[in-house]
Length: 164
Image (cartoon, rainbow, N blue to C red):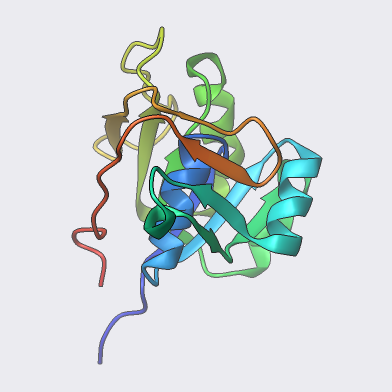
C-alpha cells in the first residue's frame, strides 16, 4: 500500500512562495498557500495564481488552494502537512513558523525560502532539531498585484524530488 502524497503548505504566497507553490500545484502536488493579504487570497481563490512568464509558454493560470492567515485554524480538521515552506521576509520567518507548526506532521519538514535580498539564512525557530532546510532564490520576480507573478529574468524549475 502506497503512502498518501505529501501535503505542502507555503506560508507567504508572494513573489517567492506563490510562484513556487503554484508551480508545485501545477505539477500535481497537494499545495496550500497561506497569505496575509486578503485581496491576494481572494483573487487566487476566484481566478487561480497567474504567472506571467518571459514567454507565452511560461504564462499560465494555476488553480491552487489559498487561505488567509485567519483561516489557518481550520487546518486542524485536516491531515497534517508534510512540508511547510516559510516564504516570508526574514523578520517574519519565526512567527510564520510558529503559526503553521501545529499543522505540520511530527516528522515533517520546515523550509525557509528567502529571496536573498538583505536576508541571512534565517531558520524558523522553535521547530524540532533536524527539521529545517534553507533555500534562497534570486530576486528576479515580483507579485505587485493580487494573484499575479511576473518574471524579470528566466527561471528554471523542476519537480519536487522525494515527493511521491
